Structures are given as C-alpha cells and as structure tokens.
Amino acid sequence: MLDTLLINIGQLLTMNHGEKPLKGEAMGRLPRIENGAVGIKDGRFAFVGSMEEAKQLKAEKVVDCMGRIVSPGLIDPHTHVVFGGSREHEISLKLQGVPYLEILKRGGGIYSTVQATKQLSVEELKRKAKGHLDRMLSYGVTTAEAKSGYGLDRKTEWKQLQVIQMLQQEHPIDLVPTFLGAHALPKEYEGNAAAFLQSMIQILPELKGMAEFVDIFCETGVFTVEEARAYLQKAKQFGFHVKMHADEIHSIGGTEAAVELGAASADHLCGASEKGIEMLAASDTIAVLLPGTTFYLNKDRYAKARSLITAGAAVALATDFNPGSCPTENIQLIMSLALLKLKMTPEEIWNAVTVNAAHAIHRGSSAGQIQVGRFADAVLWDAHHYAYIPYHFGVNHAGTVWKHGKVVYQRGEEACA
Ligand SMILES: O=C(O)CC1=NCN=C1
Ligand SMILES: [Zn+2]
Image (cartoon, rainbow, N blue to C red; front, side):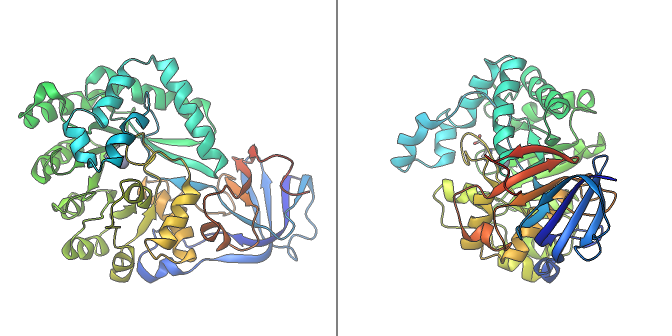
C-alpha cells in the first residue's frame, strides 16, 4: 500500500538522464512520461510510470492531477538567503545610474548589508531567512545553496553559517552551505586584500562541517583573479569544494581561473571570454547563470547561454537571491528570463533548474530527478505543458510541493482533486 499516488499526470517530467550533468545538446532533451503516475512510500518515490502500469496500485491518498504537469522539486544553486536588513534605500542611486560597484565603493551595497547583519541575533537572522525560504518553497524549490558573506569577520560569518545549519534542521528545504567570507574587502583592510584573505583562510579549519563550498567575489574593485586563485587553492587544501562569482560585471578572466581550479561551478559569466567558454565546455565545472541579476542591474550583457550550450558546457540557472543585485526568490521568473534573455529553450531551462542545478552543488545523485528510490521531492504545477511555466511570466504556477513525500506547500484549495 503506497502512502500517496499521483494519477492522471499530463506530463511527468522525470528528468531521468542518468547520473551526470547534461552538457551541450543533451540539455535539449526532456525525458518525460505522457499520462503518467507517481507512487510515494516512506518519503521516497516507489513507482514512476504510466497510468497503464499503475492500474493495480493502491494508496492511502490518491491525488488526481487532472492532466497537469509534475516535475522534480526545483534546485536553486546560488542564493545569499541569510542576511539582515534590505537595500531599497539605494533605489534612488540606481535611478540616478550609479553603478552597483560604485555604490559598493561608496560604502553601500554589501557593506550596508554587513552592518545590518551584524546587528541581528542568530534567532532574528534565522526568522528572517525562514521567511525567504518559505517563499522559495512556494515557488517549487526543495533544495537550495545558502551562502554566508555578510559578516566579513569570523564572528558574523560563523553566525550566518550557524543559522544555515539550524535551518537545515528546521526548514523543509535542504540547504547546502557555502562560506563567502571573501565577499568584499572590509574598510579596515583597505589596500591590504592579502591580509584580509589570510584572515579568512585562518578560520577555514573551524568551518569544516559548517560549509561544503568556499566562494569568492572575483570582480574589478573587489578581489583580483590572482587573489581569488590563491584563496581558493588554499580552500581546496583544507578540503573544501570551491565556487566563484566569475566575470559578473567585468571580463577579468575569472571563468578561466574557476575551471583551472576544478571549481564545482563558475557563476554569473556575463563577461566570460570565448576561451573561458571553451574551457568550461571541456571541464566538469557547471556554468551557473543568473539572468535575474543582469536584469536587476539594468545591464545589457547577459551571459552567453547559447554559446555555452553550443560549445558543450553544462548550464544551470539560479536566482542569486540577495538584497542588492537580485532581490527576488522567484526561480520561475528566472526561468522566464532564461527564455527571453538567454534564449534558452524550455527543455534546456527545465534541465537547468533540476539536474544541472543539483550537480552545481554536488546533489546530482539525490535531487533533481523523479526516480524510484530517491527522496520524493516533487511539484504539481497549475499547467498542462512544461513550456507554460517560462512562457507565462511573473506569477507563481506551483500548486502543490512535496518534500520527502510530505506536502509542504499547497496554494489555496487543493490544486487538484
Ligand atoms: O550585493 C550583494 O549583496 C550580493 C552580491 N554579491 C556579488 N554580487 C552581488
Ligand atoms: Zn551571488
């Protein structure tokens, strides 16, 4: 007897591609079962197949999906979800055309969030982050990366990672922690990036078990490629996997360095060079694209998704949710921006927010696919075709979200009988 049986699924997006990230043209394939059914038992998928094959199955609870689509729970592999305060007070500067990096240089931006984060207790930070995670869950996200980076000192970076660890226990979304202490150079270290990065390296040993990845903001006016390379080399020596905010605003060769370091992912890539794109295509580093940030920073130069996919790279999508350069938890909006601005196809987009997004945070073998034996993380959508989600933008299409087989979000009345 199953616990739950989902029937009459118009399109069951299993994403059953095997155990590797999808590269190049493989991203254009979307394994699915028309008129499918999914059985859940003890928190895991116990049956995945057609209605014909499911005829004899019995369950405590049957959900008639009435021809709608079911997908794996979505993965958001790049978020700055733990932070204090907000930055709407900077909107007037944005409207005057003051660039993001200039606001940072003037002591705003990341620095203003650092101040706000330092003022919150662990409990206050946790409560605030929980609200953001609840919203991500409502959009269909069941696994997400969560970065620190709003402390730039041992005490506050630790506090953020502690909040992430507590939320991993208390919130349905599975969180993957990243240490981003190298997010910006504190004013007290002005002109001495090496000393600051050394101070971050010194705390790495005590962060084992608190963070899986180490990340750095490699950008003009923040940390150079050489500083980033040396810093992440050290992080690898301490046993961390690495990621990089690379070529987000300026093309300074961060992409190449990330690939040379064997980074799990290189993120942003708006300014990735042709060489960087080729290196990504020939590597295991996932290209994580964040079109919401390009949109919100009012930039014209989006990451070259078509060149990346044509070259054979593995592309993932993420919100980059943060209070400054992308204040939205809405992964479905990112799917629409990927369609409209990155020119990705619906099939590529769905693979980029499931299978490849999972691999970008080393969860490819446990998240992003509907497969017998895996945890039952799934979304029932108020749509009958998978292209409808990126096509109909700006609204929430998630009807019901399951995490480990339990309903963790339901919009209004039951989306289906
Ligand atoms: O501005 C922020 O708070 C987040 C960010 N880090 C690097 N780019 C954006
Ligand atoms: Zn970011």
